[in-house]
Length: 370
Image 1: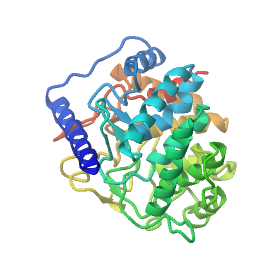
Image 2: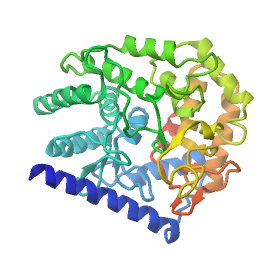
Image 3: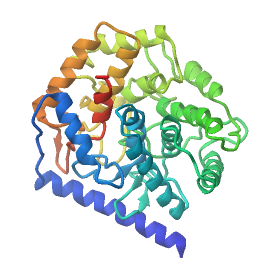
């Protein structure tokens, strides 16, 4: 019965999200904010907080996504929102414990679910990352729950002898694509392995170093980290996440990646184009050429743009200021922080989808001003 209740909640949560998506596409309006890029982002972050948890956007993603929150958690802490971050994490852990599982999404009613796949390879890693970077103090009950979830995660996703990621379908950042063990997923497992001892959890049987070696041996192609094990194609989240999470700290390799981005014009208008090699990937139904054409193709994704800006700043690159200004002009052009825009910078729209406004990713941009 408990499983049925959880499953029903997951279905309801997914249906609500799909309804909001279609409704916003045809009937919703996009709220514009006054001011420069920084002022716009401050207003968005404030509005996404309603006293209980950080919403993911001011559009149809008006619920909690562990992945999105995980990427901005450290930025929110650095911006002075530690209390709200801890409140959000406590809220999420309460619902996860009640459901007996860590999922990608939690709606406002507390229903937990994964979307668009039934399993999420990155929800637990982003949760542990968030707990570490925010110095969250776990209760005895929360720690026991996380230990059980680590065991479940390892059995589900990893070969029990080698720790290698299994070949299977699951949700990850580029959820429109079916990957063969993406570089992004390997980076998140490496980060999970790093966080486990810091949080005082049971010893994870595998170590960060083996996933670092996996990235270097099986994904680095001389110019960037390839998207997955079956292709040498470029995909922004896979190329950048090993560096963004600090799994790989190599100035020569990041310079190679920056050069590839520059030479191929992936930052020509605004940073950053998802990929120009759109035919190299297998897409989920409707997310390639039909219902959501070019959703994660040659479109410009602001999420990856901020990862790119952070890395340019971290490695003290001379192009940082120019790229920062380009990105700021995109925010000011639209009066909000868009999920993604077309290659010409206009708002992305598809037959049954419209890019969301007011993304929580704005925290990543705001942190760059410090």
